[in-house]
Length: 329
Image 1 (tube, rainbow, N blue to C red):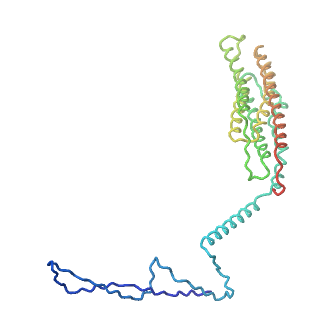
Image 2 (image 1 turned 30 degrees about the horizontal axis):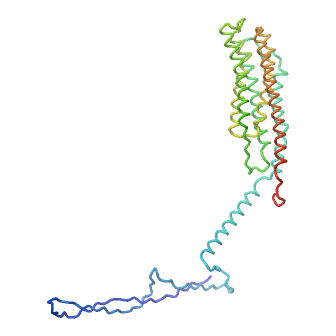
Image 3 (image 1 turned 60 degrees about the horizontal axis):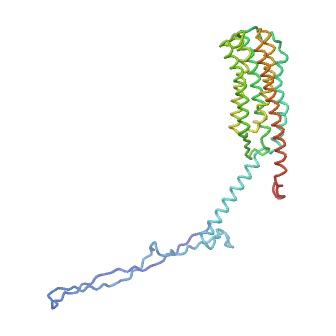
């Protein structure tokens, strides 16, 4: 260890001692005092704050070359060197944290099973119950039990669709989890999508209003209307809520969400056509169901055309984008 030797400095301090003389009378009758100050210099070892402090001598015992705590010519150089050391420590910590994260190739291995698991969930929750379950097991007539059975089937599909969208969102994310991603749907897409959805709401409600007012004959009982259109309207409301949440979160699955729900809606309306014969629905109700099937097939085709356009737009954007420099990773 080194020993610290402080060399005290002695600074003189002047003390003023007044010397009074005897008064003398002047001609004007006034008394005048003559004071002379004698300055005496005394040595003192304490330095004042404004005086330059004495140099500090550091004598290391185990450092013969004098490299220990080697200073710089200016205090600003020392501060800049301290900042450089802090920046280097921060950079080392970031590199250490990045090295502890899982590699993109490791994350990609976990995403590959989702390409099969997601569609398998859609098949098990949406198509299998509708295609393989007999009608007699889910429909017992125009009553509340049949309405709850059909609603339960659509809720099971909605669970599968939600899980599929979560897996699709995870697969669409970049390989590097630290890269931000923002996929915002265009306003025109949101507007026309809402127009199509609201139109799908208005048609059944207008038919119900006309049946209750007597404009459409014969009259359709409310429970029969609920069995045919209740699950349809419920799933349509869930689709609107799901799309608005996806647009708000700017998820990259905004383009495939309506395709999933609209494809199932066509199957749902075809099931309603089959059930129309069971509830002895009037002809105008059957025509309404057929019109809705045609409407949603048209909307589904527009959605698929939009997917094709978006794929071409992405390909053109990649061609226009300048290549990255050779030194970048």
